[in-house]
Length: 291
Image 1 (spheres, rainbow, N blue to C red):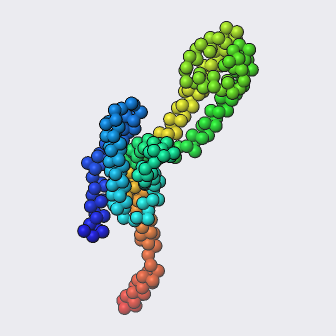
Image 2 (image 1 turned 60 degrees about the vertical axis):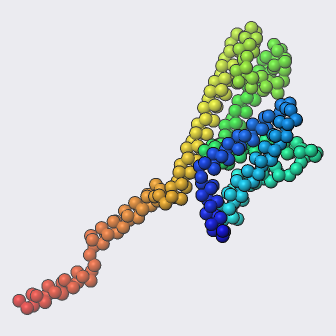
């Protein structure tokens, strides 16, 4: 069997839905084994789990090899960050470090094998990419939220420190208290305590909750949804391009070219060739001379 046949077989296996579901089920089984290791188990069951873990690592290695062989340009295989991540996870899992000083790294690597679910399922990968692309825009929202937090923390520490120094003693403790209020963790108890001294302090709490829990949360959701829609559109365009379908951008370019062609033809029709017009004049003069 030559290289081309092996690559063709690898492509068919990689694109096979049954093989994809099999890999996903192995990842889920790997996650269950990680949870099982946290319990006290009989010795025979421990040995069984260990052999199953080794088998899962071999299956992951086989799956990585299939994806590598199915790649037409082998050099570009590691240009994809998810391919690099999967390869590192599998290679480190092959190193026998269970009983050494690096055993904790081996356990952590096996825990992160669950993240391979993201690289296998395109929908999860799309969601994660959308979140990463939304981070720059979310950064400004978080900065504005921190400013609001800091202002309210300073106000709370100024007015409420004498009422309850445990919650409002300084600005750092006030920030933690405000985070508790934002998450609605017994925030009414904190409010009623200050209302006993400052009757209108409920305005402080309700305005803070409105700004943080409602306004900023909706802003974050809106940004993530917009980025997700853009990612879906971009992924659909790449899919259409790979399948040879005409995209909206290509269709718009063709319409503009057709419009320019029609305009040029209409201009030529409106202004005929001067040489042809001159020939018609000469013919008309000859006909008059003969008459």
